[in-house]
Amino acid sequence: MDAATLTYDTLGFGEFEDFPETSEPVWILGKEFNALTEKDDILSDVTSRLWFTYRKNFPPIGGTGPTSDTGWGCMLRCGQMILGEALVCRHLGRDWRWVRGQPPRGEYIGILNAFLDKKDSYYSLHQIAQMGVGEGKSIGQWYGPNTVAQVLKKLTVFDSWSRLAVHVAMDNTVVMKEIKQLCMPWLDYGGAACAEPPGWMPKHNGCLEGACALAEEETALWKPLVLLIPLRLGLSDINKAYIETLKQCFQLPQSLGVIGGKPNSAHYFIGYVGEELIYLDPHTTQSAVEPCEDSQVPDDTYHCQHPPCRMHICEIDPSVAVGFFCRTEDDFDDWCMRIRKLSHTRGSLPMFELVDCQPSHFACSVDVLNLTPDFSDRLERFFDSEDEEFEILSL
Image (cartoon, rainbow, N blue to C red; front, top):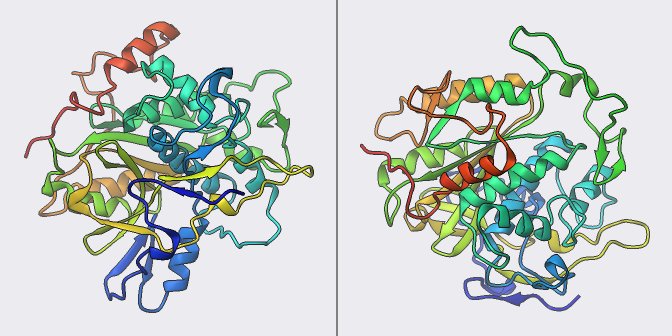
């Protein structure tokens, strides 16, 4: 493989600052670590996250489009990382660890295949870029957090192996009833179960994968939830009243992290230590990966094997999307309880509102109304507010 091409804000692999020696707790996606005694565990956890970066020499997007996403695909890659974490939690569990050279599990190879840079992978750059055209973004145009969330929501519909329910909560409001209807669509309003379509079987990126899917009784009760909440936490800088709330999101066991970054430079934030956010940086260009003849995927370049990057939390751009994964209904109920407790934390401001039912000032909801595709697209573009049009939460 060609040597990685390091872009404008990425350090050389030998120049990364080591993890700090500090007595302050380190939080990584709902897990707490001690930096003095568990440094190896921290690095193992970070390395086990899927790391999607710029790639080059992949098939042209759309047949005649770009063969590299260097300079424009960083938010798309961050979207892949947050969804990749959801798929790892879904199929392998949060405690799964990647070990270099160890024979991989079939589910892990299945997840990687879903992100390979080719048109027929569910969550490839090709699919995200082309689906983004329906969100008003031309191929090669930079995305914001809300746009990539809306695109991922649409792409997961085709992934019958994972059977995820993706909800993008708009207007800084999470409506519990909408989510429960989304995750249990086979229940009508009277509570009666609806049958699956005749002859239905789970497919994994076009292949039958009955052995790798979750137990049927689990998904019969609840479709695993990926909850994405686009937010604007200030005007040009983050409002300091949100800082503690943002940090506490990384402590929740359901945390998928945060996609955001600096203006026109996206990062995938996976935790924090002290006043610094810990993140994976997609701004490294690597060659596209092709599966081997035995269908195995060379995976070393999909894991960040140096100490993670850090930045002061006040440097983050206020436009972000926060992610959570709820494997079961109990997980979601637990998340709701924890969010309500956080909303009463003194000295901090809630980033979003959690309500039982749709507020009366909501004119309509894309998730619960049966809209035509064209009207749904126009409505979601109306809500595409990652730059200037976010509703700013006031103190």
